Image (cartoon, rainbow, N blue to C red; front, side):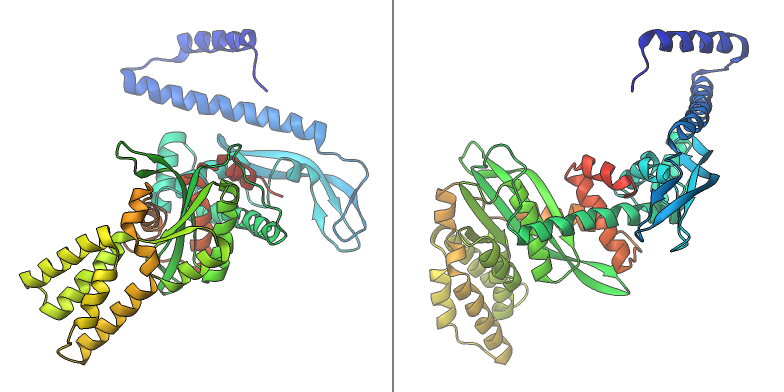
Length: 431
């Protein structure tokens, strides 16, 4: 509902008259501070009067209401509660019902307004989650107080993130269940020409130790002036969970992005076995690509193992094989590895390990063919996802998380980064 222009002008006229009599500012800064205080005071008055009138009109739902136990809850009385709004706490009286069979009480009006047992309104919860999802809790609550006058403890912000993050995860679980039944429809109106799915893992300090947090990025592509794909509109998924569960979570997001109707799909990642197991299971027709720079890191690691840390000969050897890998694939490197004569058991194990790595991923390293088709050969978007989703929010100095706290934060942060604001608004309302 919007207020019509004439009524707004009437209000502004009253405010101008009041200001002419009461406002005396020494400079611009003082005047702006007074204007902020006045706006909050007016907002508080609007909330107090409007909320009371709203509850008077709509909170009574008849002499009884259905109870979750299957019986009827009877109207008892009007009971008071506080609602923490953007303009401060407001007391409101609303109809309260009680079931004599299960001994539980309820206030249907609370549910209709999106209020939970906590103090805060949906608008406050949404604002707090948006701030806490972008910066540490302490900084978030301090910024909110300075900018809006809203005062909330860090523990309150944590509870809000837990509430919203839990609901976001519940919605994702429902979508994953629908996916098992083949009911996921793409959210895009137009089938993407080419869709990438990237997977990687990073770590965060959770439950007293460092644990892997799996991260995925789904993105379309646009060709640059050389005809090579560039990442467009990445969508992130992140969770600390086993590979199978993460694969289902990521596939739901990919299906919503249109992977099932895309003309061509690409899975890109490092050499981790779990990535390619998920690729084969969820994206059987996709082109699989091992990140070129990850493959190069293997070559340089072997060069250091064979020639020593600072030997120029080793650097030249590695550089030459990286160049050949890019234009010819791993065939030349595999021949060189088979001809190598290790100096000791440690070198022998390193050569064996790299032979297995490059042999297993031979078809995923046909970089010249991939580039000829305009495909990306680097997993930069998902590596950036690891940094922006997990590193920037969960791995700042001194941060320690519980498993539940980390998961709820990941749910809120990915929703923010993916610009899923409607999902966050829905999660801010109690169910």
